[in-house]
Length: 171
Image (cartoon, rainbow, N blue to C red; front, side, top):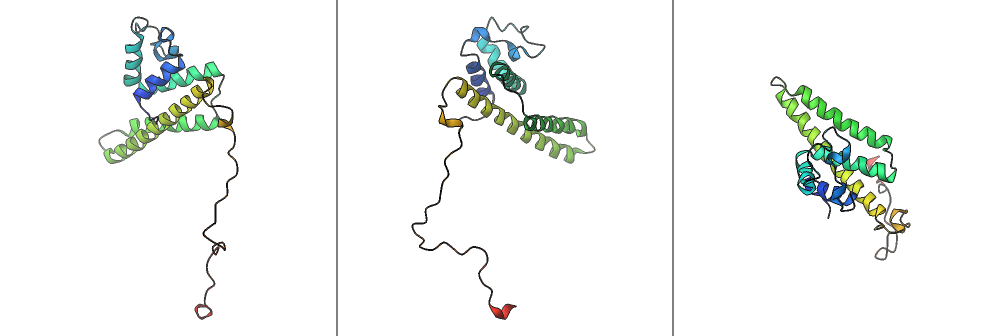
């Protein structure tokens, strides 16, 4: 079972690099720190540090890496969800003062929940894209499932749909 978090971020980035750590660059080369952290000397440690200390950047960098490699574009829905996440984080930061402490804590809690949910969804997308890239899905994995019907073996007649007929005395 794949869960979310820094360990998964580490594993997915490593897999995105075809397990070749000589290809590793901090934040996949998309951030100003990239190539300046000495990652060529100890890529395993640098990737682990990135995944734990810069979790959001690590998830986003793996996303950018896969989008570039597999020629994937971000959808409008993805942009909307990611923008909503950033707006909540900014709002929590702006409202984070003593006078509005309860509201600030509530907004911060909602912001964190949305952030972790979005990161989890991104990591799930990463895994699916990597499975697709590496040929682990098979041909039928991305097709529509066949239509299914419920078995009614134990019921000779279908159940009554809607409300039962009302007695005339209630009208």
